[in-house]
Image (spheres, rainbow, N blue to C red):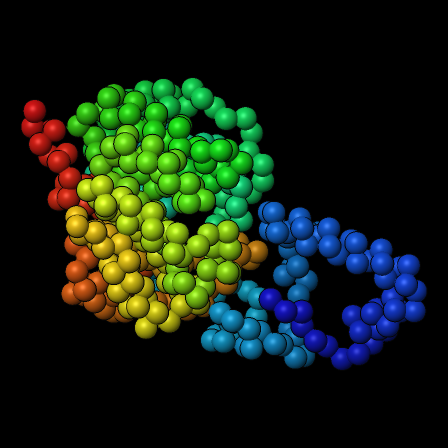
Length: 374
């Protein structure tokens, strides 16, 4: 968000710049401070000195309408009001209460709870949950993500055993395992990933296992470790259209993510990806993305199988703003278009997240039903 311009006065930024130019030493010190702040925010963007909106007044002149992602709506820094179709249901029901009781008793934690997922009640009632491994600190700083950024703590090599034992207690039908990026590790955490998958499948033979993995910075031997561990579904999210990558996924590459999905399909795996909408893309770009997804992951075993599309919701004022609220009718149009292009499954809706109806996808596209009958 660009600063607001007001009438010139004794304390305006313009006068401050003039004063600094008259004292080179002061200007140099100010430049050093500014660079330090820039690096800090690049590592972990969080507001410095409290929330600036608490004392913000209506601008005399605002440039918000001229900035990417802010052309529509009010020219203000305040979060936009959610439309009626984004209201989440209060979680409850027998299945939800059973799983919550197990988690509370054994002090287990899920991404569903920590992220406040709007679908938690529905998923838990069906025996579906998402857990995160490899710690809670990510080595990247994506513009949409609210996960803590920094240098992670020491690698926990006992985590795969504990995860498998915890999942056995939970008695799930389907689990989605995800992780932070661990770019500081030579294998990007692939060794922990592989062991977690193998132990989980052994401990829970009737539970389908879906993994939502990072790109491992294009380290294909690391990816192969995950593929060899044989999860039922391998998911890697594209997150957005290619044009938006510099703002949304600055440390990722669109082509690299497509190549990861292609390699999964090349070896006969079930490949899945997902995107957010309402973060600055256009509808024609979403349509183009679906075509590219199928074309650039094509192998003798087919192309990417599953695509999820959901509404982007801004976690904090420090994250990328919401460009638009996509209507349910538009989400329906995305689904129809994706299926017509050849995708096997398209989950598209305002509240859709990566794990939405993931158990149904596993039931229809993997051999898990045979395992449950043995």
